[in-house]
Amino acid sequence: MRAPGHGRHFCQCGMTLVELMVAAAIGLVVMLAATATFLGSRQLFAANAEAQAVEDSLRFAAFVVRGIVRQAGYSDYAPDHAVSDGTVVIGSSANLMASSDDPSDLDIVGASDARVSFTGESHGTHNSRGVNGSDSLRVRFFGRSRVGGDDTEPDGTMIDCMGFAQAGPSDGKPSLDDRAWSFFHVAEAADREPELYCKYRSGREGAFRSEPLARGIEVFKVVYAYDGNGDGVPERWLDAAQLEALVAGSSAAINGEWRKVVGLRIGMVARSGRNDSWSRTQGELLYPLGAEFSGVSFKPPADGRLRRTATFTVMLRNAIKEPAP
Image 1 (tube, rainbow, N blue to C red):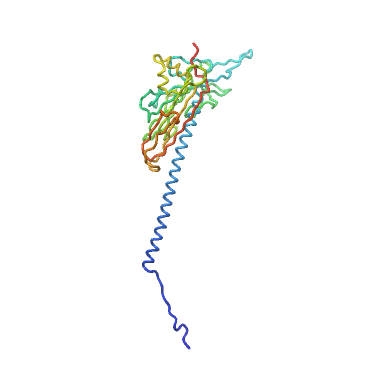
Image 2: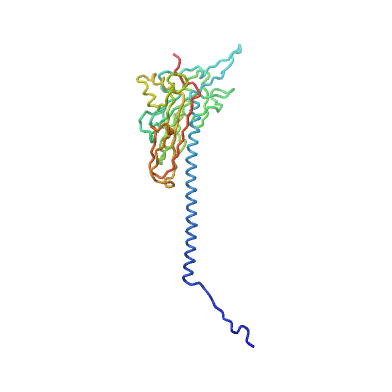
């Protein structure tokens, strides 16, 4: 008999150097692919976040500007009080007439290619080198006070561009100065990023101040629907400089042209905050007011930023006409 296990051969097998190198190479390829996928996903997430931020800025800016423009020229025609014989009296803002030659009495006014001071009631002047040729816009309107309260307590229906509720005019001695102020203009923040600003007045006798509304808005353009014959249908669209060039001479004549405005077309361009998420090739011309206004264009630099435009039209709800003589 042979002893158990006699004649069996045992072989210890391992990996050769070539096999080890091939395995390492495959593992490295898998790791590089996983890293590339992770980095690509991260970059895509950042790009999507930037795109969403641009869209949000445009939507919010358009929402605020549209709402304020619709309030232009608002006056409260609700009865102020009833007298003993049962008749009602409409006083306050409804019976106030604007001056024919005071520019501050206009409910809608703007300037083309304008820079606007952060303080004071000026809406800027034409061709004062606005950011990327941006325009300015100023809107005035009366507020509305709460029924049953005093004349200083707003009911919240009328707000300025910062969202502050505006009270109606004083019951005792109503004045055009009681109207709210809302300005829109583009300026650069401390880090040189363009922003759409709101300039407003803090209180009826307070100081004017500007606050940023929407970051990344680098172009703000406005044209006005001009109704020269007074039939309520605009004949043409004019920017602020073109409108004021229709007449020469007195402020009263210029104010008369502004009171023939029946609507506004507003366009904006917003850009992303990052400059490394998008192609750096030179972009095509952008038309803030739409392709039909091809004379108003903006050619952005090849800075790797995403840009979007928003255009909308607002027809004025309230009468903004030449006061009766």
